[in-house]
Image (cartoon, rainbow, N blue to C red; front, side, top):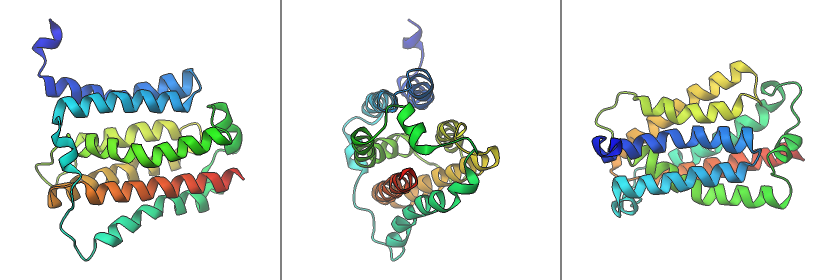
Length: 213
Protein backbone atom coordinates (compact mmCIF):
# COMPACT_ATOMS: atom_id res chain seq x y z
CA UNK A 1 0.00 0.00 0.00
CA UNK A 2 2.83 2.38 0.83
CA UNK A 3 4.45 1.97 -2.62
CA UNK A 4 1.16 2.90 -4.31
CA UNK A 5 1.17 6.24 -2.51
CA UNK A 6 4.65 7.09 -3.78
CA UNK A 7 4.96 8.37 -7.39
CA UNK A 8 6.48 5.56 -9.47
CA UNK A 9 9.23 7.71 -10.97
CA UNK A 10 10.25 9.07 -7.57
CA UNK A 11 10.34 5.55 -6.12
CA UNK A 12 12.65 4.19 -8.84
CA UNK A 13 14.85 7.27 -8.85
CA UNK A 14 15.32 6.81 -5.11
CA UNK A 15 16.10 3.12 -5.55
CA UNK A 16 18.67 3.93 -8.22
CA UNK A 17 20.33 6.59 -6.07
CA UNK A 18 20.52 4.31 -3.04
CA UNK A 19 21.70 1.27 -5.00
CA UNK A 20 25.44 2.09 -5.33
CA UNK A 21 25.70 2.93 -1.63
CA UNK A 22 24.00 -0.31 -0.66
CA UNK A 23 26.09 -2.26 -3.18
CA UNK A 24 29.34 -0.79 -1.86
CA UNK A 25 28.55 -1.49 1.78
CA UNK A 26 27.25 -5.02 1.12
CA UNK A 27 29.50 -6.13 -1.72
CA UNK A 28 32.78 -4.38 -0.96
CA UNK A 29 32.86 -3.91 2.81
CA UNK A 30 30.75 -6.86 4.01
CA UNK A 31 31.05 -9.69 1.46
CA UNK A 32 34.44 -8.48 0.14
CA UNK A 33 33.40 -9.18 -3.44
CA UNK A 34 33.64 -6.30 -5.92
CA UNK A 35 31.91 -8.20 -8.73
CA UNK A 36 28.90 -8.95 -6.53
CA UNK A 37 28.69 -5.26 -5.62
CA UNK A 38 28.84 -4.21 -9.26
CA UNK A 39 26.23 -6.71 -10.44
CA UNK A 40 23.85 -5.71 -7.63
CA UNK A 41 24.29 -2.06 -8.59
CA UNK A 42 23.84 -2.70 -12.30
CA UNK A 43 20.79 -4.92 -11.85
CA UNK A 44 19.07 -2.22 -9.80
CA UNK A 45 20.03 0.52 -12.27
CA UNK A 46 18.71 -1.53 -15.20
CA UNK A 47 15.32 -1.97 -13.53
CA UNK A 48 15.14 1.70 -12.59
CA UNK A 49 16.09 2.93 -16.08
CA UNK A 50 13.45 0.73 -17.71
CA UNK A 51 10.76 1.79 -15.24
CA UNK A 52 11.58 5.51 -15.60
CA UNK A 53 12.40 5.85 -19.30
CA UNK A 54 11.27 2.55 -20.82
CA UNK A 55 12.42 1.97 -24.39
CA UNK A 56 13.31 5.64 -24.75
CA UNK A 57 16.45 4.95 -22.70
CA UNK A 58 18.14 3.58 -25.83
CA UNK A 59 17.07 6.62 -27.83
CA UNK A 60 18.98 8.87 -25.45
CA UNK A 61 22.26 7.31 -26.63
CA UNK A 62 22.05 9.03 -29.97
CA UNK A 63 24.43 10.97 -32.18
CA UNK A 64 24.81 14.48 -30.88
CA UNK A 65 25.53 17.51 -33.04
CA UNK A 66 29.21 17.30 -33.99
CA UNK A 67 30.90 20.23 -32.36
CA UNK A 68 34.48 21.15 -33.09
CA UNK A 69 35.18 20.59 -29.38
CA UNK A 70 33.40 17.24 -29.00
CA UNK A 71 36.56 15.19 -29.64
CA UNK A 72 38.44 17.27 -27.08
CA UNK A 73 35.69 16.70 -24.52
CA UNK A 74 35.83 12.93 -25.08
CA UNK A 75 39.63 12.84 -24.86
CA UNK A 76 39.41 14.60 -21.50
CA UNK A 77 38.33 11.19 -20.21
CA UNK A 78 42.02 10.26 -20.20
CA UNK A 79 42.67 12.81 -17.45
CA UNK A 80 41.50 10.76 -14.41
CA UNK A 81 43.78 7.85 -15.29
CA UNK A 82 46.79 10.14 -15.70
CA UNK A 83 46.05 11.87 -12.38
CA UNK A 84 45.64 8.59 -10.50
CA UNK A 85 48.87 7.15 -11.92
CA UNK A 86 51.07 10.15 -11.13
CA UNK A 87 49.50 11.19 -7.81
CA UNK A 88 49.21 7.66 -6.42
CA UNK A 89 52.47 7.79 -4.39
CA UNK A 90 51.36 10.90 -2.46
CA UNK A 91 47.57 10.35 -2.49
CA UNK A 92 47.43 6.80 -1.11
CA UNK A 93 47.41 5.88 2.55
CA UNK A 94 50.81 4.71 3.74
CA UNK A 95 49.62 1.18 4.55
CA UNK A 96 47.93 0.54 1.20
CA UNK A 97 49.18 -2.06 -1.26
CA UNK A 98 46.89 -1.87 -4.29
CA UNK A 99 47.46 -5.44 -5.47
CA UNK A 100 46.64 -6.80 -2.01
CA UNK A 101 43.62 -4.51 -1.76
CA UNK A 102 42.24 -5.81 -5.06
CA UNK A 103 42.83 -9.38 -3.97
CA UNK A 104 40.91 -8.69 -0.74
CA UNK A 105 37.76 -7.95 -2.80
CA UNK A 106 38.27 -11.01 -5.01
CA UNK A 107 39.93 -9.18 -7.91
CA UNK A 108 43.15 -10.80 -8.98
CA UNK A 109 44.65 -11.92 -12.30
CA UNK A 110 41.85 -13.13 -14.59
CA UNK A 111 39.02 -11.88 -12.37
CA UNK A 112 40.50 -8.36 -12.43
CA UNK A 113 40.72 -8.40 -16.24
CA UNK A 114 37.13 -9.63 -16.56
CA UNK A 115 35.95 -7.04 -14.03
CA UNK A 116 37.76 -4.22 -15.85
CA UNK A 117 36.37 -5.22 -19.25
CA UNK A 118 32.85 -5.50 -17.89
CA UNK A 119 33.06 -2.11 -16.19
CA UNK A 120 34.45 -0.35 -19.27
CA UNK A 121 31.76 -1.80 -21.57
CA UNK A 122 28.61 -1.89 -19.42
CA UNK A 123 29.06 0.60 -16.58
CA UNK A 124 29.22 3.82 -18.66
CA UNK A 125 25.98 3.00 -20.49
CA UNK A 126 24.04 2.23 -17.31
CA UNK A 127 25.44 5.12 -15.29
CA UNK A 128 24.88 7.72 -17.99
CA UNK A 129 21.40 6.36 -18.73
CA UNK A 130 20.47 6.70 -15.05
CA UNK A 131 22.46 9.54 -13.47
CA UNK A 132 22.04 11.82 -16.47
CA UNK A 133 19.27 10.31 -18.61
CA UNK A 134 16.77 9.85 -15.77
CA UNK A 135 17.35 13.31 -14.28
CA UNK A 136 16.43 15.66 -17.10
CA UNK A 137 18.31 18.92 -16.45
CA UNK A 138 16.13 22.00 -16.45
CA UNK A 139 18.85 24.57 -15.79
CA UNK A 140 22.60 25.08 -15.59
CA UNK A 141 22.55 25.10 -11.80
CA UNK A 142 24.26 22.29 -9.84
CA UNK A 143 21.82 19.76 -8.39
CA UNK A 144 21.77 17.29 -5.53
CA UNK A 145 22.16 14.43 -8.01
CA UNK A 146 25.71 15.58 -8.84
CA UNK A 147 26.76 15.23 -5.19
CA UNK A 148 25.01 11.87 -4.82
CA UNK A 149 26.78 10.56 -7.93
CA UNK A 150 30.13 11.64 -6.49
CA UNK A 151 29.34 10.41 -3.00
CA UNK A 152 29.45 6.67 -3.52
CA UNK A 153 32.73 6.95 -5.43
CA UNK A 154 34.20 8.86 -2.50
CA UNK A 155 33.12 6.13 -0.07
CA UNK A 156 35.06 3.57 -2.11
CA UNK A 157 38.14 5.80 -1.91
CA UNK A 158 38.03 6.33 1.87
CA UNK A 159 40.06 3.16 2.69
CA UNK A 160 42.54 3.97 -0.11
CA UNK A 161 43.30 7.71 -0.24
CA UNK A 162 44.29 10.29 2.33
CA UNK A 163 41.28 12.38 3.47
CA UNK A 164 42.27 15.48 1.50
CA UNK A 165 42.45 13.45 -1.73
CA UNK A 166 39.09 11.81 -0.99
CA UNK A 167 37.62 15.31 -0.67
CA UNK A 168 39.33 16.46 -3.88
CA UNK A 169 38.04 13.36 -5.70
CA UNK A 170 34.51 13.99 -4.43
CA UNK A 171 34.64 17.61 -5.63
CA UNK A 172 36.04 16.62 -9.03
CA UNK A 173 33.40 13.92 -9.54
CA UNK A 174 30.64 16.30 -8.51
CA UNK A 175 31.88 18.75 -11.16
CA UNK A 176 32.01 15.94 -13.72
CA UNK A 177 28.41 15.02 -12.96
CA UNK A 178 27.38 18.66 -13.40
CA UNK A 179 29.28 18.98 -16.69
CA UNK A 180 27.86 15.72 -18.06
CA UNK A 181 24.31 16.78 -17.19
CA UNK A 182 24.74 20.05 -19.00
CA UNK A 183 26.29 18.43 -22.06
CA UNK A 184 23.16 16.25 -22.17
CA UNK A 185 21.07 19.39 -21.73
CA UNK A 186 22.78 21.18 -24.64
CA UNK A 187 22.94 18.26 -27.06
CA UNK A 188 19.79 16.34 -26.22
CA UNK A 189 21.71 13.06 -26.18
CA UNK A 190 24.21 11.10 -24.10
CA UNK A 191 26.69 10.14 -26.80
CA UNK A 192 29.43 12.56 -25.73
CA UNK A 193 28.92 11.71 -22.04
CA UNK A 194 28.98 8.00 -22.82
CA UNK A 195 32.15 8.06 -24.90
CA UNK A 196 33.94 10.29 -22.36
CA UNK A 197 32.87 7.92 -19.56
CA UNK A 198 34.15 4.87 -21.48
CA UNK A 199 37.52 6.52 -22.10
CA UNK A 200 37.73 7.55 -18.44
CA UNK A 201 37.02 4.03 -17.18
CA UNK A 202 39.59 2.54 -19.55
CA UNK A 203 42.20 5.10 -18.46
CA UNK A 204 41.47 4.50 -14.76
CA UNK A 205 41.72 0.72 -15.01
CA UNK A 206 44.90 0.96 -17.05
CA UNK A 207 46.41 3.21 -14.37
CA UNK A 208 45.31 0.78 -11.64
CA UNK A 209 46.79 -2.15 -13.56
CA UNK A 210 50.11 -0.33 -13.99
CA UNK A 211 50.23 0.55 -10.29
CA UNK A 212 49.55 -3.06 -9.35
CA UNK A 213 52.56 -4.34 -11.31
